Image (tube, rainbow, N blue to C red):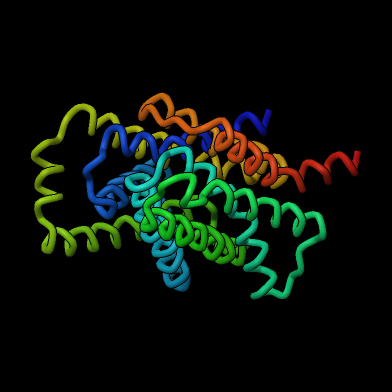
Length: 289
């Protein structure tokens, strides 16, 4: 049952790319990030008021800057420059980068199984992102790599907190801090490119409102509450399987909302990447049984 619940936030996160292109195609990424983060953080604060200790502000500011301000802006750059399916599938390579990061920084060597499927995932990604087979915006690809780095660094900092700060306080205030930082960045950016912001405000429509509601309430408020709540009640193994819904949602929402289509060979590579990302966990479960 928990695995199916874990698929809910993963699914909504996977729709971010297509929903942004479909309902908010010309909005600046910094503005989108600010609107996604700050209202969500304030809603969480209203649902359960909390205030960090004075000593915790520095770590929450770091988390807000990395996990929210930088990560959200990169996600929307990806959403506006890459196909939804490519963004969703590309993010399944996070375990490979995390494995390399902990190997270099923490001297924690990956298991043979992790190394083998990590290599398989890299090869499949190389084949899928081959410039001769598919044309992709290099800015979007760089944003994807940077977003993956944010996930790894932010998760490492969050894990180091342990039980020092209550999870609701961490979630609420990193969204608020990140939203404030993004609001400041968007305000500065609007001074240099005011036409993008004026166009977004003057042309505001019900379609825009629907997209923002989806991103704020479902992708962020509901998604993050379920994510943190489920992590307290299920194993990382179970949550890994629930995460399959993320790239699948990216592929399906891209097809339905944007009419994206790829060759059978490319779809096969996408499916292979998804399977390779969960294969080490699946094999470990089979071995234990």
